[in-house]
Image (cartoon, rainbow, N blue to C red; front, top):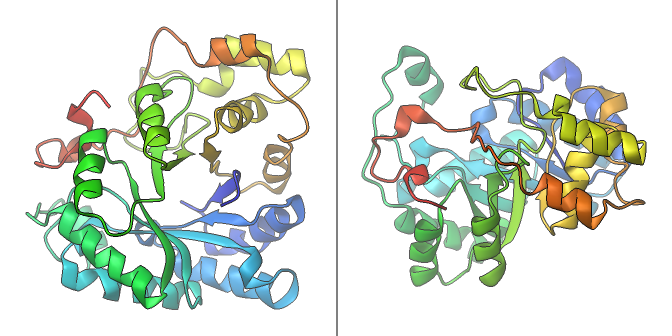
Length: 301
C-alpha cells in the first residue's frame, strides 16, 4: 500500500477528471473511497478513464468501506458487489468496516439520515468481520481492515479472525496524534492510515472551538523553516511516524503540492513539537451515535 493516498470524500462528478488526472501525474496510486460518500460511480468513471489510458489496474491501490447499515453478515457481500459495480472494478485492494456501530438494515440510508430516522442494530462487528473474511477467500478483495475502531474492539476482532486486519484507518494529526493506538497497532502488525491529516475544516459536525491546524503558529514556523507548506509538513509528519496518509483536495495544484513530501525530512525537534501539542481535539466524533453500545470513542484509545 502506498504511504500517500488521495481521499475522495465530497468530490463531485465534474471535479473527477481534473482531480484524477492531476493525481496520477503527481504520482498518486492509492485512492480512498467509501460507499457513504455517495460518489463511487463517479470515481468509477474516472478510474476507468485512467486505466484505459495512463496506468494499469494492478498499479493502483483502491480502498473502499462497508457502511454501518450493511453490517448484517448477509449484507456484506451484496454491499461489496455494489461498490465494485460502481467503481467498475473486479476487486478491491482493501475493504474496511467503516465504523464499529451497526445500523438497522437499510437500502436507503441517505434518506433515513436526512430524515433523522437512523436506528441502531445489534449486529456485532465480529460477525461482520467473519463475513468480510469470506470476501478475501473469494478473491473479491485482497485485504481487509478496520476504520474508527478502538484497541479493545480490535482485540475482539483478533480473537476470532482467520484473516487478521491489515489496516486501521483513524483520524490523526498534531491536534489528535493517537500515539497509544498507533503503538498498539504496530505491536500487532497492523498498518495505520491517517485520515483528516490536515485537521479538516470542512467536517459539518466540527466543533467551533477547534482552531485551524494549517494556521497553527507551530506548524507555520516549521513550514517556513523548511520552505514548505503547512500541509506538506503535516503530511510528512505522518510519513516519518510510519503512518500512511490520505489528504483530500479537489485543487490540482494542491494535489501536486501535497505529493512533494518524500525528498526532505523533518528534524527530530520538529517531530517532537508536532507530536506533543498540549491541547488535543478529536474532530470527527460522530456524537450522534455515542449511545450505541459499540461507539468507539468512550475508551482511552
